[in-house]
Image 1 (cartoon, rainbow, N blue to C red):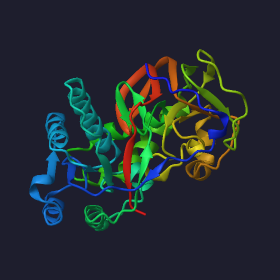
Image 2 (image 1 turned 90 degrees about the horizontal axis):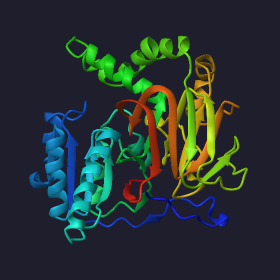
Image 3 (image 1 turned 180 degrees about the horizontal axis):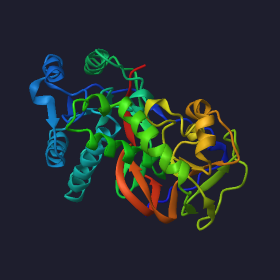
Image 4 (image 1 turned 120 degrees about the vertical axis):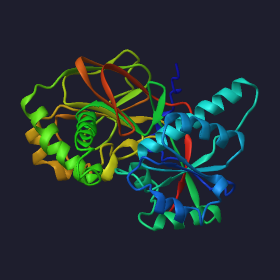
Length: 357
């Protein structure tokens, strides 16, 4: 078990460390299943990235093979294109290879990662100020030329062995599950591509998520601290001494319990507005809200400015979540089925993300 050592109080308010980006050999890993990844894009990318450094994958097996090649050939920078889930998938496969090599006696470095804005939600791409549209080509060229000024050191959430920028149970995962189910139901129709993005999310929310949570009952959720945890007030200030391991952070009805190490979900939904209060910890947000309250205050919720007694925030590094029923579960914006128990912790390994601003 990884438990982050307790830091002195004066570290509160520390921002993520920013270092100089190091140019070097660059690999580009694209999820061929992503909506914006097509033959036209592949052709255009072949003019800015050598063929030997350009990889398209459709299956997990292909991704594993590419990750092994990336590590063994010593790429210093790896770009992923296809959304937050694409980054999560490739980065975890790369880290799995690195850990195997270290057990074998080698010591390969962790490459710095770049994000191309080619997904649907693009939370990480927005975090790093990645360009949209044709700007993705400029981002690659600038990085290869060493013109990107810095990298952002990012901590990640460890959920069931996967490292990701956020994970949780309840409403957020329910929307993802409904989106996947809606897209699958319309996969063979004439509007397949139309429902593969924002329109699909809107349809899933209005036709599936809202009725499900409006007329259903909220689950009872219990969250236990296993490491270090601070309770925050509605402005993100620490209000109590650190909570001891074993302490119950929350027990009661809730529509969602989710944790992240970046400020927002996709589409810049600022779910974790206080995550930068302290480096090395994730923000846990518990929402004991009704659907009418959510819908009535959605703009402020989206901006991260809505305050309510039904929103509880913590900074922590290792927690257990138990529910009285199986709840939708998501890791990095990808639906992962249903769970009545999850453990979320801050991953031991950090990642350096290329900054484009």
